[in-house]
Each structure stands twice: as structure tokens, then as C-alpha cells.
Length: 281
Image: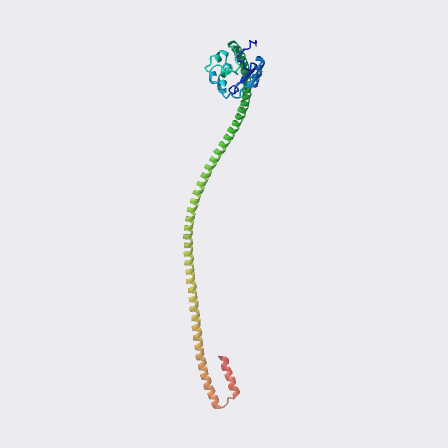
């Protein structure tokens, strides 16, 4: 940079640069070091400055980021002289002539271009790194999506199998219900038939028992009749025997009477005769 004649105005602090708080947004230590080396000045922050001067376009850090302009930070001598409030508000501000301002603008523009280029390169590197990260992340996402799709297909197949199994179970359950109904019907039929058959058997057994009882009764009656007949025969025999015995007794009594009358029978003979009579009975 070609050194131009140093301006003699403002007269106060000719070798210092005073910057306000509103400049902090775009003036950093690197910029100030370069500016000191080029201008041979030292910097001093003006702590009483809280914002931009209205005469400089109400500049602030946010507007500077949108539209950088060194003219706002460092107004030219001509602008300061023609300011609405005069030169007093700018007496501690470093000012340049129009030519110096253009030269500084050019240098600053070149620096800004280099800075923008470096920032662009840095952004490109970051973008490439981000792209690589994005590619890696995309690959991971794709791999994860493949795994998820595989899992989803597996789950779908398993769900289909489960659904098929459920349908089969429903069919089996329906068949079981039908079989249970059929078994219940057969059971009722068998119970009814069993009751009928049992009743028939009972009737047959009852008839057989009645026949058997009739036969036994007849047999008993026949036996009783035979016994009665035998008893009657024996009774007749006994009666006949008794009649015969009675007749013999009568005959014996007569005979005994006759013997006693004759006096020929002894006591022993009498006993012997009695024993004979008892033996005959």
C-alpha cells in the first residue's frame, strides 16, 4: 500500500485509532493488526460509544454483516465536515480523504475477498466433510433400511403365518364343535336306545322270572299235593293200623279177660303180653 500524506485533521490524538462498540461486530484483532501495520496507528476502544452515530447511517454489527462498508466505520473528511452536527462528534475518529478512502476500500475489499475465498474454501472443505459424513450416514441409513425392510418382510411373513395358523385353529375349533355336537347327539341316541334295551331286558327278565316263579309254584304245589297225598295215604294206613290195633286190643282184652277168668295167666305172662303189645305198636 502506498503511503499517502497523513491528514492533519482531527488534530487530537493524531497517532491513535479510536473505535466504538458498534464496530466490534466487524473489527477483530487480525483486522486491527493489519490496519496498524498499514497506517502506523495504535487502536484505542472508545468505551463511551454504545452504538452507531446517526450521521454514519445508523450502522450496527448486524447491518455490517449484511452489507459491509468501511465508509460507515471510517467516514471521510468531506462527510465529517458536511455532517449535520459538525465535526465535534467525529473529533476522535480517524478520517481519510476520498483517495485514501478509496485505497483503503480497495485494500479492505481485497482482504475481504481473500477472507471470503478462504471462507469459501473452508466452507467447501466443511461441505465436502459434511457430504462425506452425509454419504456415510446415508450408507448407514441405507444399510439400516435394508435391515429394517428385511425385518419388516420377516415380520410380515410371520404375521401371515400366524394369520394362517389362526385360520387353521378356527377351522379345527369349528370341526371340534361339530364333532362335539355329533357326539352329544349320538350320546343321546345311545342313552335312549340303552334305556329301551334295558327296559326290554328288564321285561324279558321279568317274564322269565314270572315263568320261573310260576314253574316253581307249580312244582311246589305239585310237591305239596304229592306230600298231601302221601300224608293222606299214611294217615289212612295209620287209621287202618289203629283200627287193626284196636281190633287186636279188643281181641286181646277179650282173650286176657278169658285167661284171667280162667286164672291161668301169671303176672309175668301179663307183663310179657304187655311188652308184646307195645312192640307191635
